[in-house]
Length: 360
Image (cartoon, rainbow, N blue to C red; front, side, top):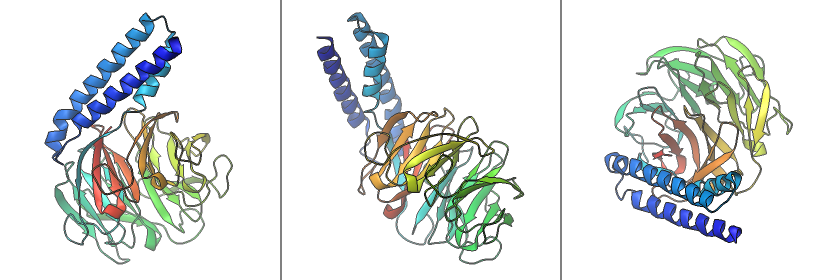
């Protein structure tokens, strides 16, 4: 009887949650319209969870059973689509291959475009601000940029893939410095892909061919590296692309070739991993981008499944959103992802030539 009661209650919560989600989804891409709905949905979900817990406990169910039911109900929740911007082209605010995205402490959003060889800066709502770059190998020029990260001081680091280097810019695009050359040695790159910056200003870069992560000071001085090709703990199965810094300072890397996420200390010591190949909850199919918010939640771009998956800092599956398509909240070949200080998540929806913004 208790099992039937649990099942019935879970189904009820799921149906109510889905209904709330649909009612809260904006019919317009206006950020203002969505912002009004976000608190309402959150409050409703919290009320549902509270009442469900009370009812289950009243029915004499254990705390563990109550927690299980709540977790199953929560896992059905999705992120709220806020807005999207961009279209195919070379003009201001347009994209050819928007590959990576980053957000600064003021909420500004930076997008690296692999094919237009530039970086564009936008407000958090998608208003175009400025851009820099251009095809070439000179200071400030780019050749197929892949990764982008912003320090707490506002400087922007870009992995300049075709030139086998990292370039540093001010928040307005002024060239500051660069480092790197082609090779397999310390401070060298074969395929400089993802970039991340920790709270101390250290810069971490993933290398797709060398299957490693290299750590540098904010000015480009080589510090250390880790990783090699393989399937063991701390190894990578080919083309580690994304990278992010968790709220506790650990380094989180999607292992693209092994369909898993690996976590390291900031000196490269292997800590843990999660994920297996598949399309179920917590499974992965070619994970690319990674981002972490101030609460420790980790967001992974699951490219092969055209979705975003959210995990706790320990790798516990929380929820997911997205499907393949071009509608609001859908994806076609997503790559980069970023989280801002307000809890918003930005996704580089690469083949749809746009950036999508969500509120998880």
